[in-house]
Length: 577
Image (cartoon, rainbow, N blue to C red):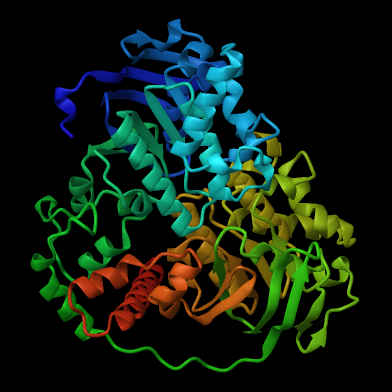
């Protein structure tokens, strides 16, 4: 789409924003024009100001988050500082990262109708509008369901419909993929793309998962860093420019593979999406690189630490959550547990920790049946970090939250401080030691919960979506820390939707779908198996797709070799430092 021929719909001019609670401004010197009908992706590291930029558009700044504004921000030609939040909400519809925080109604239909009720729309027109919008997002069959009974992807569709009823010009998506499995994420991106194309909306997406958003076209990518715009380019230009890795933002895996293979990536190769890439110009180098790689050493055998033996669990007689699950995890392994939203992954973790009791089968820890062991007894061996940090945190101050488990165990206070300081440093939270938890972002709270488990020194650590909502830099810090913990002998299980995490860090992956185990192999094998990926709502890695498109003789091996090569590079970088 030719942005320059279109009418400006959003105009930042010499714009600056300074939260009253912060010492320095969060946004500086923002000059940015977004045109009517564009689809724009905003990326940047955590704390870069990208979410603040979004909050300026939807009115959360200055109405919910107070601060000083300088310069100009116009939407549809009107200065936002002259409007109230109600007027802005009629122009900009926002779908939040946390769908639960957006629900008002007791049913899907009520929730979608909320804005119409506020506008005193008649019953007949309201019902017709709700049904029409629900159909657009494929939720018309679930209008009488409670929003809290829905899957992550369905919740997001309801939130989407709730902003669509107002027929706003601009749709703002704040991390729409954060809590979705890969296939549901693809569906969400498809849905955004359909609405953009069919209804001529201006779409702005704020998201860490760059490659997943680029599954469909975007006009421009705005890169924000340290409160300033670091780049404003088309996807093809940005992937060719080598800007993202320097800022700690993960570029698409296939683009990294091209660079490892010695390809001089240029914008005219159309590298912004794998579907548009000029394969003829890169295939020879990719094939040559594949031939030069060495195979991997055989996996060493280690003692067993955790075994599921014909494990089944159900909350009610009608609904079986886990069915005849069998697996073995060896001491010192790093394992991904992956699968669809609602597949039973988190329930499996709850059974292992003793939060719920299995109906059939056994969990063995170092060969001993855990049946009859209390949650407290299991917590001496197994730590669990939940997906939603708000469900774990119970102290107002960060230090006290991280120290809580040690205090319950009667550890002396001077020893506690040493351990807490170490855990906070590892999780990048040292500067916030004396802060209240309420002052932290969702991602920072997540790191507090990881720190509160790390201080307890468990033999097995289970993490539910450890990197959700984290930028690539913080993701890497957390994962490298978990890897170092793993190298000291801690066995780590991660429930994740992040296919790159699975590939890069966990040699062993267990796949759950519909409460059953459908895969148990290396991550590279799982993510190159079309049957398993389809059934479990995973996504074939773009490394495999690149290898197939280039005619690599062993595309499965290509994926594993990429992981090994990247691990080697990271090791070399560490040694150089």
